[in-house]
Every structure is written in structure tokens, then in C-alpha cells.
Image 1 (cartoon, rainbow, N blue to C red):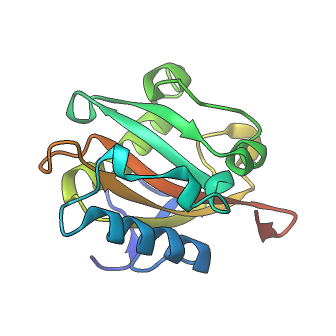
Image 2 (cartoon, rainbow, N blue to C red; image 1 turned 135 degrees about the horizontal axis):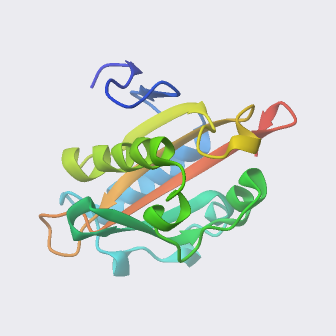
Length: 167
């Protein structure tokens, strides 16, 4: 996949070939070991005790009806601090019902992982929160699959810039 901005609804995100931060590399190595040659590991294959030092920046998003919607299953504490809110348990359609552009962009970003069934790395501006648009993020998302064919959960890591550095 080439570097550069994603076409379509994106103006704020750049897809990159490799993670910007070494910590994301560590999560990718863990994910790759757990997937054992499949498109992604099952949720049960992910043991939080293996990655405790990464958990503050980890997220999991349930894929609902093949990507018709997405629900935040888990949002790490540093992500919550960086964005100023906790989206755990909430669907994209609920969170951004009054922001159709943000909803379309976030859904399209998650669909890259669902459709391509490979890790996707991105960076850009926090466009989905009007009061945080000056902040930047970098992150990666990887597929989890219960049936070995379809992406059921997106597992990833995100860092939000605060005070000039990623936290």
C-alpha cells in the first residue's frame, strides 16, 4: 500500500507503510505472533497480561454487521486523556450522529482494516473532535477474526499529541 493521503472522504489522515512510533511496532509483533499465519488472532488469543505496558494506548473496536457500524469495546487510559473523553461501549453512529463528515471519515478508516484484512497505520489531525483539532495522532489497527475469514474486532494502538509529544 503506498504512503500518502487516503482518497475519498479523507483530508486529515495519511496512511503510512510503517508505524511512526516504536511502541506500535511492539504491538504489531505481538499481534503477528498471536495470529499464527491467520488473517488475525481470535479475541481470546490476546492476553492483556502479555502487553500491560502497552494497554494505556490500546483500543479494540467491534465490527458490527460487516462494518455497518463499530462499537468501542476498549479504549486505553492515555487515549481517553489525549482525546478528553471515554468512548468505551459507544457506537460510532451514536457518537457522531450530529457530525456526518466525521462519522463517514472514521467509518472509512476502520473499513480499511476490515476490507484489506491487514494492519493499517495512519497519522494525522484529530478531526473527529472539534475542540481537539489542533492535536495530532499516530496509530495502527490490526484485524482480529473469530472465524479466520472475517474481521470481527479491530485491535490497535493510538497516541495523541499533547504538549508537543505523543502520549
